[in-house]
Every structure is written in structure tokens, then in C-alpha cells.
Amino acid sequence: MRSHWHTVFGLTCAALGACGDGFDPRSLLSSYRVVGVTVSANEVSPADSLTLKAWDFDPRDAGLMSDAPPPTYAWSLCPVPLGSAAQFQCLTLEGVSLEMPLEGDAAEITVDLGPDGLDLVGTVLPKVSAALAKLQGGATDGLPVTPPPTLPLQFRLRAGDPSIGVVQVVRTVSLRLAPSESAPPNKSPRLAALTADARPFCEASVEAGAPECFAGAPVGTTLNLRVELDSGPREVCTADDLAQARCPDATPPIEALTYSWFTSAGELEFDFTNDETPENALKLPARLDEEGREAQKVYVFAVVRDGRGGLDVLEASFDMTRLP
Image 1: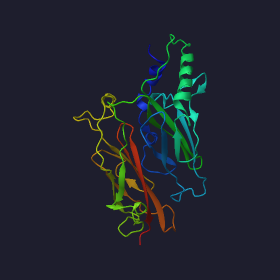
Image 2: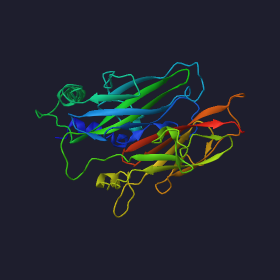
Image 3: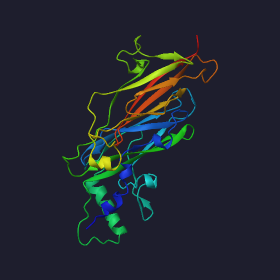
Image 4: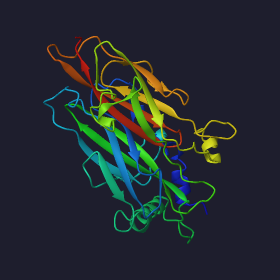
């Protein structure tokens, strides 16, 4: 018998990756924005804990909208996401959404999926299975409903404030109910450094404030930005990755990386760069936002994706100063 799980979760393959800045791809940060959500693991087991972190830009930090209240964070979990075709909504049964709120009102939260937390296997999934069986008239042919070995879990974040901007982003991870030796877990690529003109930003330097780190630049300057990856090997894509066009059709099928770039001031040469170009150029504006100021804080974000749901973010800031 084809289970309810296969019927519903067949709609969710497009949601196995991360989305967030895809709703607003512009690289200039002028209001509140979440540029990405990182997770401690892209694939979890029912007994795991998962940490999620929203990398967001708060315009108050850059000296904009300084009197506005801070952003708030509301997290939720959907055990039956409907995917991109349904705008990442959660399944609704009898007028009630299956999406459930999560504890934690910060940019970073940890969710316990095991029996001492959400108890996905013991409580959440049986309730969903029963609801789906009821939706189909309760006909199960006397057989238990068995979920497939891997299910998508969609986490939604509603963040911000009306005065600075409000956004919604989703991040999907895979819940593996049965171990697999043929499909190793997909690990996220890791960014090791973000530099400007070949110097690390001072707040990320080993010795903050050291003369060799990058602390600031005058208006009108063009900065050469570059990200560096950790030295770990690129992962090999699975047959499903190739079938879903999440990896290039090459021999061997190694995952390809793409980069998204964001800045709170100036103009980036590229919004996106490809696997072979971890570089960008940032042209700073000719003047500060406010007359009479001596300096303005500028924020830069770099986001890397592997096309299979893996994602990492680095954030940096520096002082843009007036011309001498």
C-alpha cells in the first residue's frame, strides 16, 4: 500500500534546501533583512538537537532608524511542508495548520527533537499520520502507516519589527528515520575568512585592532572582498541530487558552490558569484548618509551555498570615514 507519507511528501522535494534571501535578492541592505539561516546539521535523527541561527541585518546597528525598537524573533516547525509550489506553506487539515510554534525568541535557538523535547517520533509524527488517515477517510486497509526513511522538516522564522521591516524565511533540514550507508549526510560548506584588500576585518582578527587588520576606509573607496573556504574536500553528490538538478552533471559529480553578497552601503559589483569566483568589489558611496558625521558603520555579509541545502554565512563591519 502506498502510504499517506509518500503522497504528501512527494510535493516537498523542492523544499529540501534553504531559502531566505531568495525572496529579496537585492544586495543592498536598507531595511531589516535575514540573509540566511544556518543549522548545526543539514540532516538529523529523531533523537538529535538542532541549533538554528538567523544572520540578520539590523539597520539600527548601522546608525539607521536609531529610535526604532529591536527586532523580535518567532520560530515555528512544520512537519508537513508543501514546498515552493505552495509558497512554503504548511499542510492545513480541517482549517487547522500543522505548523507548531517553538520555544525561543532569539536569533539563535536550539530545538530538541527527541523524547524529552518535541518527541517527533513518539508524538508529532503519529498525530500527523492519524490526521492524514482521517483526511483520506480513515482507510488504511488494516495496515500501519509507515513513513519513508527521510522526511523534510521546515523551520520558519518571522522576524523584525514594523518600524525597521518584517521578514519571513524558511530553512528545511532532512529528518532521517533510517540510517543510510549509500547516502552520507550532506555537510554545509564552511567559510573560514572574509577579507578586504587581503586583510581580515578587525573584529574577526586574532588581535583585534592590530595594524594589519582592516578597520575602515574613506568614502569613494573601492574595496576588493574575498571569502576563503575551510580546507575540507568538496562532497560527492548523490544520484538524487543529480536527478533534482542540485549538482552539476559532471564526472565525478562534485557539488558546486555559489556566493551571495550583501552590503549596507555602496554598490557591489556582483550580487552573486560562482564557484570559481569567491571575490567581489565594493564601491563605497561618495558621501556619508548624514552630514556632519565623521564615520558610518558599514556591514558586509557573504553567504555560500552548495546547491543541496548546505549554507554558511560570514558577517563583517568597518567604519566608512569622511575624506581627510
